[in-house]
Image 1 (spheres, rainbow over the protein chains, first blue to last red):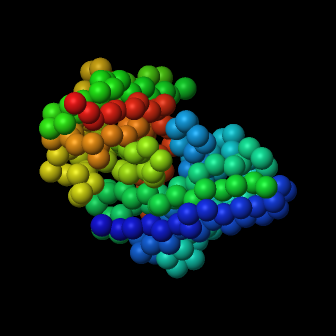
Image 2: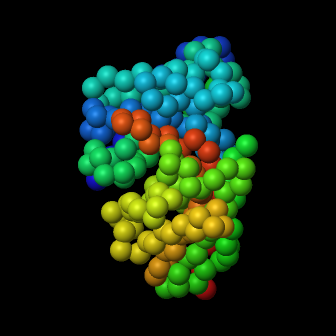
Length: 109
Length: 122
């Protein structure tokens, strides 16, 4: 089955821009979705598809993809953006199997 | 608005079967647009997809868990369920149910339950 690899941790100064990456073979065929998870809470979908935000997600969150790498960018990071972020896509087999990334801890300084 | 709620025992003995139910409210589990999934998260670790089900009963499982997992759906109760057999301490985790939207090249778990902690211990 597929694997999705993320950097374990990144930090960003308040108001600056941070990009979180997700690498895996499945991303050559399928878009990544991105989830934000704060301590003790369930994950929340923030980006899906080519670059779509669910209702209520701030427009400082954006997504992009190239080759086997998907990226989540937070432009103008806020204190409340400090959280764990996970990518997810369909498995490269395409048989309705899903895979999650290893997760990235974002710290806002 | 659609909500999902997990329920089931919080403590399971080693070698026994973990059983959880997810109740869907505010919408129908029989919607043709969605699948329904289980995801777990061991303490301090990342998310792991366990499996998904369509309202018709078609199931898809994580290959690493497939031999121990059964997911079923009860459309009359608007519920779907997870059974994980022969559990060990490694199965201790928060278990989430979620709605899965799958299109051509685009998947997303767009609505999640709050999660339920299951501990495997004697």
